[in-house]
Amino acid sequence: MNIQQLEYILAVDTYRHFAKAAEHCRVTQPTLSMMIQKLEDELGIKLFDRNIQPVRPTPVGRKVIEQARNVLQQVSRIRDIVNEEEQALKGTFQLAVLPTIAPYLLPRLLQRLSAKYPELDIRILEMKTTPTLNALRNGEVDAALIANQPTEPYLRGDTLYYEQFFGYVSRKETLFKKDLIRTADIDDERLWLLDEGHCFRDQLLRFCKMEKVKIHQAAYRLGSLETFMRMVESGNGITFIPELAILQLSDTQKELVRPFAIPKPTREIVFVTRKDFIRHTIAKILIENIKEAVPKEMLTLRPGQRLV
Image (cartoon, helix red, strand yellow):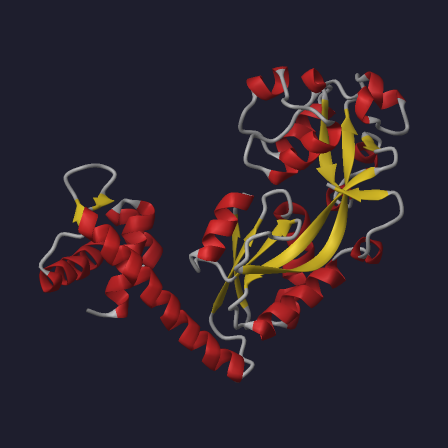
């Protein structure tokens, strides 16, 4: 039994497909299958039921996989301890980022990081909040960027910046003629919002005191913020965008932006790690560069803003 075999069985458990697992591990499928077969022969058990698609672990295989996950977490921690002792930037750093943060922050951040720290290997994974928290708990990512402080006892968060929400309003909407958005003016049947599971959606629904979104949401379940912005620009409805998104807009697009009246809904963007996190050198670099990448006024909660 070796570490490589444990990595292979975790990959198969994740992808439930031998070819996809082999691609992830950057080996051929015959090599991965052979190594897993050797491990099964050594243990005298079958780890996966290959007679069904997608493949899935056998009952005893699930127990072995869970223990393998624990072992690999401990192996990773040994490497992290050594790297941190040397203040090294070696190895990969897995960073989960919400889909409503990534398109607007990362273009401002990654170029800055690559110029200053070319040896730093940051791997970005876009995830919604719940999968992100699960990945942190399981040690599948090193850190995450989420909205609002974590409540889980095994996590800690460092505030990065505060980001206000804005309306993005079609020229055909009555709301376009107004300078400010008031929640009473929002017609939820004309509103484009992300599907359930996005904290961006949940925060705005709470702030606007809406239980659900009707026609548009039923017609288009799997949209992105960028898709909804294009719908608004074509003359259809209203959506909401985060503050950093405005910095990417043309002058014509900025004409569709409307701020909220006070109190202005605002989210807290947080760098989250497990409490037993070790790689503080890289974390410090990321936190410092993220704060440098956003406008200075976003580093503090401003008058008239309310956290949602």
